[in-house]
Image (cartoon, rainbow, N blue to C red; front, side, top):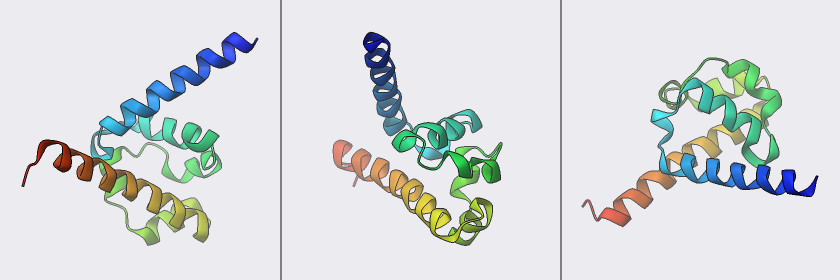
Length: 102
């Protein structure tokens, strides 16, 4: 049983690494759903219903107010917005630092 858990954690870690390399703008609706289900062990999974079928580009197009509306919870909507826009900033800051694009 323990081996299954170790393999699951390894797969989840690999998936997270892949997500870090792929900008939110390019996430499919399936990847957005996976993020809700797996980020911090599903911390925001219960709020996915309001974001059903949105891809990463559509998620980036939402305002903080829209996140709060779709999550049907002001605090959690703001938290989701901050995490996802933070992921976007993290990706671009890593990219530009790594490749010295300026």
